[in-house]
Structure formats: C-alpha cells, structure tokens
Length: 242
Image 1: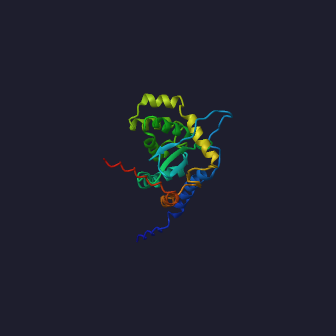
Image 2: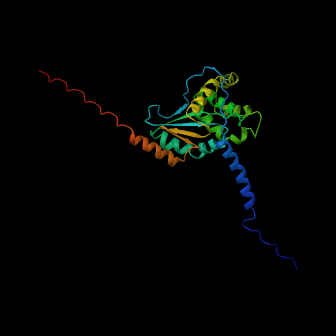
C-alpha cells in the first residue's frame, strides 16, 4: 500500500524568503546609510555653479531637491515608487518644481559616474529625464554587480531615445559634464548630505527620502506659509473726454 505523501507546510519556504529579503535589505541599507565622500575633488579645482536638472515651472513657489546616485538601490526605489506621483500630482500640477542633483557615491558604486555622465549627455539633447528613468528602471542591467562595462547598456538607452549618437558619444568620451556633476555633488556636501536619496524641501533636509504623502504634506505646508502675492494695482481711469 502506497504511503500518502506528506503535505508541505505553507511556511516551508519562509526561511528562504526571509534570507532573500535580509540580503536585499542589507544592500539597500548599506547604500543609503554608508557615508563615504561622493567624489574626490582635486584641491583648487574650479567648478561651475551647482544647478541640478530642473523638472517643472522654474518660478514655482516651492522647490524639491533630490541628491541621488543612479546606482543607489534606494534611489531607484524612490524613482519607481514616489517619482510618478510626485511628477503627476505635484510638479505637473504646478505646486512645486523638482531639481535632481548628482551625488554619485563612487567609493561603493563603480559604475555610477558613467551613469551620471550618460544622463547629463542626454540632457544636452533635452532627454535628461528620459535617460534618468531608463537608468533607474534598468539598474540591475548595468550596476557594478552586473557588468564592468556599463557603457554598452547606456549606448543602447541612447539609441532608444533617438539621440544624435555622434554628439552623445563625443560628450561622453570627453567627459564634458564631469565638472558639473562634481559641482552638484559638492553642493550636497555643503548641505550636510551624506547618503542617498536625500531630499531638501525648504530649509529641511530629509535623508532617506520621503513617501509621496509626506512630500505632499511638506509642499502644502510651505505653500500655505508663503506670503501672498501682492494684489495687482488697478490702472488709473482714463480722463473723461471733454
């Protein structure tokens, strides 16, 4: 008589799942909490003014600044989870604008500087945000664990975006935007940024980022506290005809 096959417990795979989550979580925690310097700045090297990459109305009453590393898992998670709502419900709605500041943590992410360069070169052709989205969505294809030659992946993204490849390659090969990337990172160091993602909204710095609801609440609070715009002065009436 055949013996009945014992049923597997519903929790049989729980230890494996917990191990996977622990390993993945540890990597994200390390990337967000480790505090290396973002880029080695040669003493006395002149840098351009930091400016970041703007999305939205430059005259918006509130600015959301993100200091981010394209190879940081936490930054990729922020871009995927909070990014679409921030764009649609805050930026496109005219409540605030958004500036992305480069903060590549090159001491732990070997491929990140090349990613920041690829995004900036795409920005020369008006495609920074499109490259930004592709880099974060494809992070597992080009990060340090995936390849020692991320350029091939970035070139494929440039093709997808229909960039002028000659101009893009010239920009990348000459490292045209490295000084600007360093300047943006230096602006983060001046603000005390030491991990990514870090948001700066108003005078507050938020290491680790915020949820969409938290961002919206901060923006609403700053807008409510902003002084009202002066009322338009009515033009004097024209003198009556004699």
